Length: 284
Image (cartoon, rainbow, N blue to C red):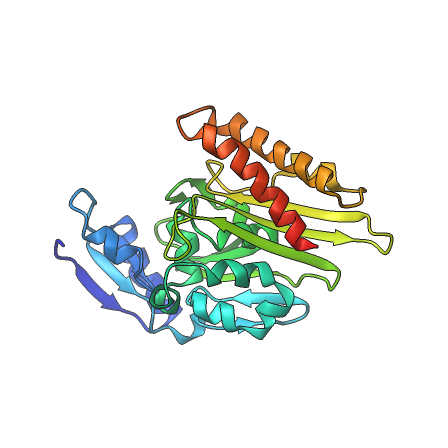
């Protein structure tokens, strides 16, 4: 590991001031589960300064004001799993956080780091996009809020400016009649990076017809997004295996339209369709 300057900050104001000074020559350290591994690589540009934000207490909380849930970026995956609010109103996010890495990784890794690292295998991002999450980015000069789905440019690259710090993730609580699920496929049952994943939410009316559907695949598209082409097939229909199979096939078609056919397509094409079907069935 090449040498760099280390700065521990204790407030958001201090953090954005250091970011304003160093810009693209700075990296943020939260849980460190991704950054510390990256800094050991020989071909990676070493930052001039690593800013440790883990001491900023105001960035570590889960709140639920006025029908919303507000996550601060230093909330760990373990804290998401054990949160009663998340369990009740955003259970798909709890499911995703529970299968990240090992207990040690979940105890250190943060939701903010999972988002800003922007790896295609990030498990919390598909559920958060399905939940309609918005994020707040703050710099020394101003603050702005954007949809999480608009943050990503490509794997490992976001639209956040070099001097901006993620300070908040917020979304509406799911209604009592909304059911959700998250399914992840890895090369093994634990300590696995997602090869493919699916976050799904279904809402039905009193007659059993689907009134709202949200499907967000992970590690399937260049950037995460809801597959509205498949969601539209579900709206107004009553759930059935045949319907969910059709929705899964549509997600598979959309994936290939974006990625083209490559060596992994022969495997991913049928598998993502099955995962979508299973995720929708799990909602029921």
